[in-house]
Each structure stands twice: as structure tokens, then as C-alpha cells.
Image (tube, rainbow, N blue to C red):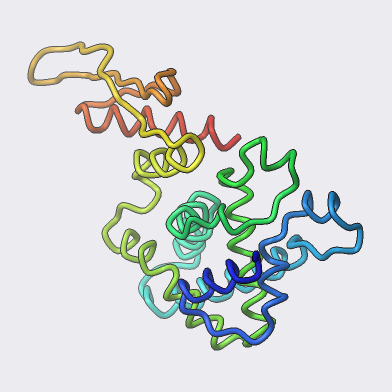
Length: 230
């Protein structure tokens, strides 16, 4: 039963809850609601609310954690933390796609692994949690959820590891691990330039250039990521 799957997700998140229907709505896409019942609730309003709550919680965290930073730098950090890529990564780590209710067309089109749809679902869940348990409990749960992202922020790697992003997407969408190959090297030995290509399901998905093979692969993955999420 689908409600039991939602309970399992909440248990995995270690979120207490009172009103299960709020979380069921958060995981219901408009395509499913329009297909099944015109009056069935779906997650767009909860997404709107969750977006605002998430911005408040993350703003408060950054304000107190980085007292030396200016308003402009805090705004940039917040944007990086709550961007679609970060939210989608959290969704992939939870295997959130398997808990979503999608219409047949959306499901057939790969909606359960689409970054934008998954990011929206994370925001909707946060909106449901806020309505269900209030701001303070919601804040505690959101901060716990974002710990891996906060750690990357401290280490200076946030949003730079596009290889991980693309790998998570490809495994969720295609059950396939990307492959990389160096297609060109140029320049003297002490100042090499490498060009890498990323393959997903044996098909070229992006290219990138760097001063090391690793940097070239990251650049290729970055190009692939922005093609995939368009």
C-alpha cells in the first residue's frame, strides 16, 4: 500500500509526524492528481511553502555559522545550498523517486528521476513538515537532512563535484554508470591540456577541458549535467 511506503520514508528520515496525509500530498505530482481525480490534492502549494521555509532555515543557519561573511556572500552561499542540484542530490540519496505518485505519462518520461521534479518534492516535504509540526521541529529536521551539503560547504567542494551529480542521475534514470575517456592531449609535458568526454549508456553526453585528467572529467560532467537538467 502506498501509504505504508510514505511511512517508511518518514521513518528513514527519522521525522515524527501527526498528519500522514500532508506527506502523501507532498509526494503526489499534479500529473497523477489530474489523471486520477480532479479534486485530489497535489504538491505544488506545499512546494511553494516549503521553498520559503527552507530559505528561512538555511538563512538562519548561515547567519549564525558564518558571522564574518557579508550579506552578499551569505546570499550566494544560500543560493548554492538550496539550488535544484543540491535538492536533487538529497532526493537521490533518499531514493525519493520511488515514493512519488506520478501520472503515467510523467512516469514514462522518466519523471521519477528528473532533478527538477525531485527538488520540488523535497521542498513540498519540507512544507508538509512545517504545517504538521511547526517551525522549530521543521528547522531541526531540515538541518539534519542538509548535513552532507553543509559538510561540502565547509570543505569547499559544494556544487563542484559534477561527476557525483551525473553519476547519481544516470544510475537513477538509466541504471547506468557514466564512463569517461580522454579524447585529446595537447601542450608540453609540463603544461598539458586534456580534453575528456563523458559517455552515458555508451553515448557521448558532454566534453570538457582541464589541466589535469580529473579537471577535464569534471568539466565534461558539468556540461552533461546542464544538458540533462534542461
